[in-house]
Amino acid sequence: MSTFTVTDETAARARGAAEHLIEAGDQAIAEGLKFPQANYKVVLGAYGWWRLVNRASLGVLTLIDRGFTAPEVAPLMRNIFNHAYALNWLVDNGEAAVDAVMSAGATSREKLLKKLERTGWAIAAQYGQTLDQQAAEPTRTAAEQSLHDKLVHEIGHVHDLLDRYGVPDLYPVYSHLSSLSHTSVDTASAYLAELDDGTVQIRATAADLGPADVFQLAISLIQAGRVFSPLLDGDPLKAALDTAISDIGVDTQSLLPRRVK
Image: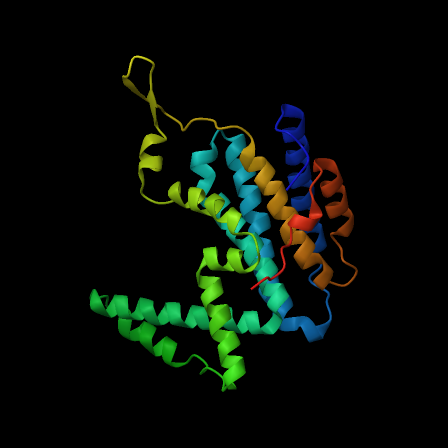
């Protein structure tokens, strides 16, 4: 995905690119969003995910500066990685994707209600009344429903989304970050170190695994910006994105995969 090797110098460039894109993003929305109203639904959906990538990236850099390491920032990195690719999917599929996300959200809320009821939460009845006020699913043709079901499945299954966009080889990255985000042997062992003599020593902090997270941050910020900025009047992030791409030598052809299935 890039032409650089991991060195202190390239890591510094990646860090600078990430910081520059976060700052450029803040400036781009300082006076609100300006975009063609015909794209209203897609732009607002895309904005939320683009903003999450930016804010979560700032969070990761802040944590790194406070001494936190890759295993400790993995939950944020997983979310950033997922949303960068999902954002590409959203804009590629337009309003149909926005509708799919909304349907997936409605289904998730219905499942939560059942869990609240099953486990005896007093708030279940009130929550159920709120759900009763949700807009009903629109009527769709057979072809529209088929596409809708396909998109709902994709946004709920990261592996299939990546596979259908021709990048299944990226799923292990997501899977590895997931193993560091849930209860697992990876999270348990992050604070243990096995010595040469076979004994185990406790660690106060997780091991420093190098600057890989900074590179991934820069790439995810570029991905998200390349998708979102063109939706706005004047493509406000283009200059910052071009600089970041040049600084870290990203292969732009691989950043925004296209659907193959």
